[in-house]
Length: 255
Image (cartoon, rainbow, N blue to C red; front, side, top):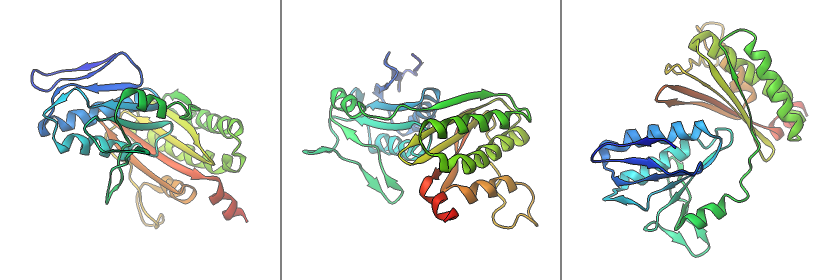
């Protein structure tokens, strides 16, 4: 259990590893702290997290907005997700409403903890992770991790692209972050989600499509080639660089 408090805007998690409860008064001034706390919590423990808004007083629309922003930010992280308990929110007769805007769908909303926990009953839990030092041999250990995962989860077509992607993400962290890192990989259907979390706030440098004249970021060009999408999420004390690979993309590339 961890707790963040100030006298006006306490933000507290309860004892459940799956539930983050926001309590007290939360206004626009506390939004950044909520975002940072949620992102940190979502990386600390793999798996979906339920954010309970039922105890908040005077919660404005910015509260749901920041929760939805976090939901979108972690949508492609390995084994991550976010649900909302909001008794005052819109919940349809057939299940939770997924608020949306031009940036994409927001977090699904449930009216109670029981309903939210029921929604998690069938959530996939498969995930592999490794804590690695910033040394040149780290990439070798990361490749072994994703090879193991592809074998376990029945996506052999993704072994080669996943090894390429994780090698570049780890080497980038070794060369530019120079900090300890955590590699995490999880399946989602026929796709594979990879992420490397380091302790450097500087975002990765992507040189684009002209590696011959640009400086740095050439390894990320390989990630961009094998992954359907990739990106970087800033954390209070570093960042998560993630990518998503799809088996059908590799089948089409080889076919």
